[in-house]
Structure formats: C-alpha cells, structure tokens
Length: 296
Image 1 (cartoon, rainbow, N blue to C red):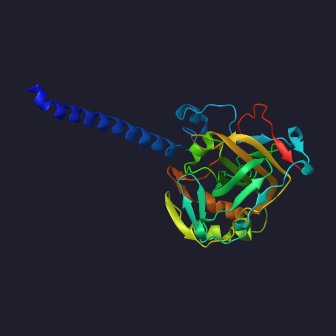
Image 2: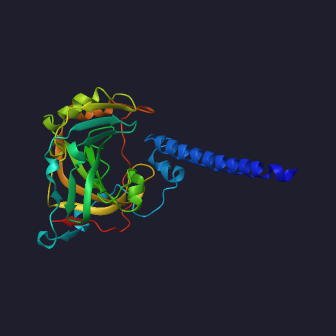
Image 3: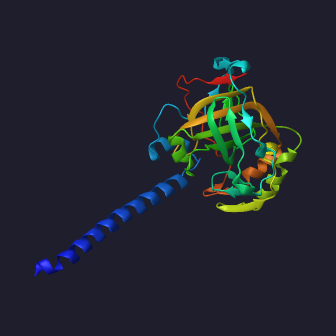
C-alpha cells in the first residue's frame, strides 16, 4: 500500500524542503536589509558600534586623515591624467534626488543609456557614474568624513562610479570585486551661496522625510562636481557606511568647493529614521600604513 503513495510522499518532502530553504533565504535577506537600514550615527548605536553589529573586518577602512607630507608623490609626466567623458558636461535626461533616511543621494540618467565615464590616473579600467552622496555634520567645522592634514570641512560630496564591465547594481557587491571608485570633494564655508547648489537646495524641500524622492531640474554633473586631471590624492579603502565593505579606490580632490552656512543648514533640517539628520559622518579610521598617493 505504501508503494502506491511513494511518489506523492517524495513530492511533498521535496516541496517542504524547497519551502524551508526559500523561507530561510527570505528571512536572511530581509534581516540583512533591515540591518543595513537600521544603522544610525547616534551615541547609542552609532559608528562605534558598527564593527560589532555588522561584523566589520579588515585593515583598510575609510575614511582616513590624509597627511600630505606622508603621501607618495607621482610626477605628472609618469602617469596619464584623469579623463572625464563628454557626458560630464551634458545635461542628464532625468535627475532624481532621494532622502534615504541617512543622507541625500542623487541619481542621474542620460538618453540612450549613456553615463559619464572616468579613466586614467590610478585607474586601469573605465568606470561609469552611479550616484552622488552628501555628508555633513552637526556644525560647520565637522561635516566631512575625510580629513586633509588634520582638517575637516563643512561638507563632503562623494561621487560613486562602478566599473563599466561590472553588471552588478549592488555597490556593496561591486566593492568586493574591486569595481568601485569614489571621488570626494570637500566644501568649505564662504559668505556667498554656491550658485551651482541652488537647484539641490530647491529640491530639498520635497524630500524632508525618509524615503522621499523628487525629480529635480537636471543640470550637468560638472557643475556640481567639477572635473580635474591632476593634483589629487588616492588610496584603497572601504565604504564609509554599513557594511563598510573594503575594496574602494578613493580619489580625494583637496581643493575645496564653496558652500554657505545657510546651504549646509538646509541639509541638517532633513528628517531621518531617528529624527533630524544632524550628522551622517563616520569618524576617521586608522590608516594602518597604507600608501596614500598624490598625483602631481
């Protein structure tokens, strides 16, 4: 009699096994997703707790304090300059600004699927634009994540690029295969507003709460993040937010851009998951004798 029901029993068992593995996979994915969404910059569960909560390991963490006197100088004639494609000057078809609960992120798209691409300098491949992310602090002296010669700036803009040959859209996974470059720009306080940030200032009023997005008026990337070919620092580090994956090639532009007190204050008015986003910076990490290169 049992033999008659054997195919049905096997089918039910296989179905139960599949459901079990799918359930575990779903729970694990949701747990990881919630985990990375639940980090904060507060006193109780801020950056000093991340290494325990997210099992952060490695000796190449970011950000760091860049000491120019300790950097390795590469003469300009020995390496190709950084090269930015024409799309950097071209107005995107669409520009979306997002309050992700931690910071302000800008995504852009061009007609025909084109993207601004960088190459040259320390890069052995071509990298396409992925996003732009702002960092700021509780006051106008502690807004940047990176320090240059022991100095922090009012704000930092991190422009993320993904290797053109990499099909992965998850930046954390791309970092594991060393397929991510981040260019950082510092902002220092000046008396006048930065006119190139005014479009962003206008858009901030529409993303006051977490998970809000707004299709802002597009403008060329070169107006927000100016191009440069030489005189920059570079080192190998990590993402500066959980899971802080290592494998990022950082390029630091030491010549600061301008921002006014009023403009930085508008960023601090945004609401995050746990209240106003007064700061979203990770403290500097130990450089651990890493090579910091200055491309002259």
